[in-house]
Length: 533
Image 1: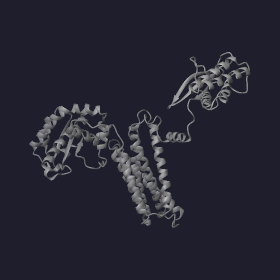
Image 2: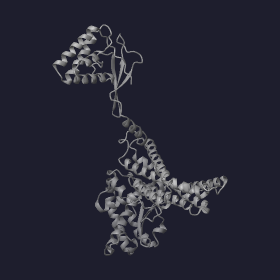
Image 3: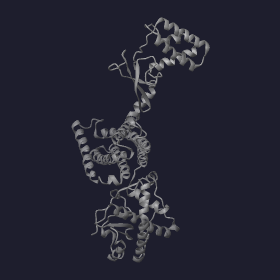
């Protein structure tokens, strides 16, 4: 950056006085601070006495006449002048200069002084504002790192995102690295199977097969999109399932190398599976990035996250191209890359910290509350969430179920109905199916649904305690609900006991949940649409 000229008028007499003053100071003291003060004073005297311009500035003359140590100090002052950091007087006027400080500015730790130049009458010249950096120019390495950070991290990082952003991005990048590497081998295999590399098919036939393959994938994407609501309440589980489907699709594509005559059906099936995985990834992306954004920077977080994924994908693709030239074992290479991909995907999903309570995290929170009296923190609850709890897997608690699923004996319903007279739900246990059912009444609101879910988990906890005592000798690792087949009287007693506990502890559970930062929503508990009226 060019600096504005310093308007200093000098005379031969002033130059001579300057040399004499500096020589006197050099002989009397070697102290660095004294040298700096001497030069500043010399500049002030020179400016006051000067009547004509000379060929050299007072600072340069002083530097030439001083000792080596003083020369270093004098040169540092020259640098101060060049960078605009020379001490100014109380009015903001730079010493021995027509520049006046207007304001100071700071951006991400870097500072600037804005100065303006005055004319002979003391008024500011037009268009004379200059920005003087108070830092030395950045080293090339620092400039490169600053450039890279502008692409891979959101503005204001790390204060603009949550603490789980960094581990998530690390595992995401590693997953995309393996994904890019796998893509090279699958594409190469598909092209070989369709006949491109061996010239066994005409260009028209190749194009038709490829178009049919892509078309089948789009159809699968549209069919699976109707499951959109599940992407909200089983976000992590579906995200991991999508990555598993992506690897399954890649594996089917590799099979076409062994049976090239079945290219079209296999390629279509693989593309359907991979497009379903793509829908899952796209649908779960925004809620995850939203959990990282601390302010209104969801767009910035999303853009930088996708950039990280693309960079890792390109690196993986480049590495895979180099490996493929050596003709490695296709099965071994694919197995290694798939293991890396799936492991990275699992760690990526586990690193996400969500503030909402879906069915899995709600179950963790209630179980912890019943066992210890406390609700787990956000990090603890997300860490304990079961990622392998797939949406199609049977759940021990069903909320908003139909009456025929919960009751086979009308007497069972009539015996417990008075217990829920003041509630907008009914909770029961079906021994034949080994599940707890929460039936909702037509007046049920959001809080009633959450309370019904809490009550259902409390009843499940009682059932599990009975089964645990019965099976203690066998040391079962999982609860087998079908082992508990109580009589109608025993079941009514259990439900009555759960009603008392829910009445005493539900409000306490809600307050503890809010203290830990959890947000409860009835929609994330996936209640059924059946209602009693």
